Length: 195
Image 1 (cartoon, helix red, strand yellow):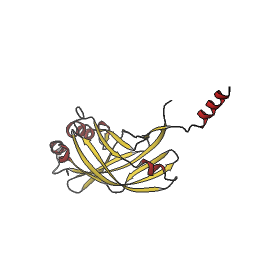
Image 2 (tube, helix red, strand yellow):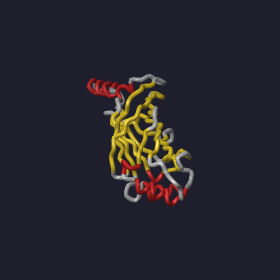
Image 3 (cartoon, one colour):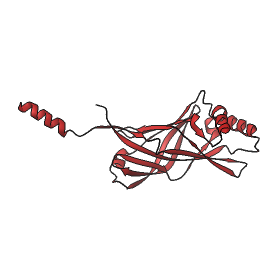
Image 4 (tube, one colour):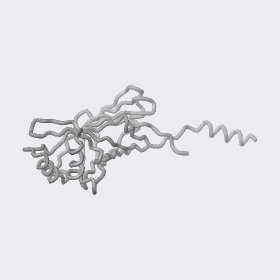
């Protein structure tokens, strides 16, 4: 009987284990700015994001390229087919390692400034990406990552120059700038580990 009580006491006192921090897609956003005719800028986004940060701090963000939203359904379809080639490359992935210990040590409302280096995999190519981020502990079980300066992504680095040219022809434009500026606001929430 004493052994049973001791066992129950030990089980009650064991701290709750937590698994991954999961991306909250409803509180997160990823936008990119395109420029056409050298002067006309347009803000676009992806509607479907998913991701996680493991207990070891390895972060992965997945972008459903078919969810591109330019506020123009015809343009969205053309970008999916001719630029992203979603039939073969449906997803873009960004991976990086975060200092999760430093993040979880933050008090609610505190912010940590940090350089973030990761790998962007897009259209069959992988390239290093660097940016400065602000990480804020938004609650006891969530944190937000926002890039302080936009990330410049060049279509040529990912074998997408032909897609840019095709879009230019279809839209009858004189020029489409081949690079975009990307900004993100990502919220991760701690998820209890499965029993």
